Amino acid sequence: MCGRYAATKDPAKLIEEFEAIDLTEGRARIDHNVAPTKNVVTVVQRHPRDDEGQVLEDEPAERSLRLMKWGLVPFWAKDPSVGSRMINTRAETAAEKPAFRRALVSRRCLVPADGWFEWRRTGKEKEPFYMTGPGDESLSFGGIWESWHPKDDKDASPLITFSIITTDAAGQLTDIHHRMPLIVPRSHWDGWLDPDRDDVTDLLVPTPDDIVASLELRPVSSQVNNVRNNGPELLDRVDPQHEAALFDPPKS
View 1 (cartoon, rainbow, N blue to C red):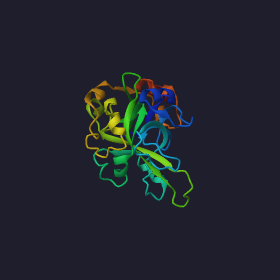
View 2: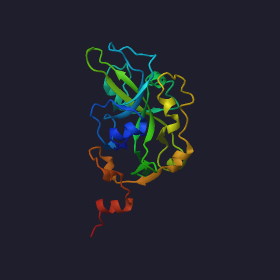
View 3: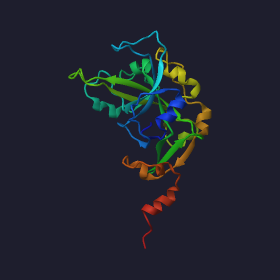
View 4: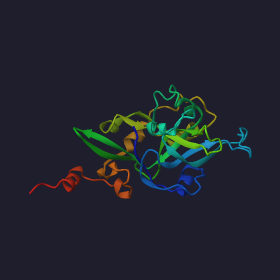
């Protein structure tokens, strides 16, 4: 699964990297410890709308940065709290599940990340790791998104939420956890974001082996366990034995 990640690029860098316009309205923030239910930057591609909100399907789709809340709320949900249980979507079953299949067909997004956190269980202990790429280019997680409207308040602004697609872990990542986010390579961005492409068969493919092999699996501080901790030190490599000694010094 993917339950925590880092997103430290400001919109100016993401605009250039994804060739998108910024629709975050100045509300985007860098975050070294992104947790579910936070509002974070995603990349979408949609056809423009006219003044009455009607989609102009004859106009080319525009790629943009948008803020969304992490945790998908299906359009038919009665209560938005269900989103906290839908932070991830399994690639293997997304096309079959009522909560995800509509979004998978027409509402796909990319989730820019510097890397993600995962915990390796050793006995009763869970050791945190940070998985990140070799350069400055973002890891682009495949995602799906939805727009939810409260049925008792038709004038309320819609709640825009997303979920990260996950697949079986591959290569070196299997030493940490059995699941991983689907990383969409740059060559597949256009297809993943295309709002007119409803055949997703060729999109839900495993992360390329070369991307998996290039990732650094970095042991990090257990400070990341607390969602209130948020700073660049969370991404630093640590010696787990040294950290254990700091928090549990030998008895005299």
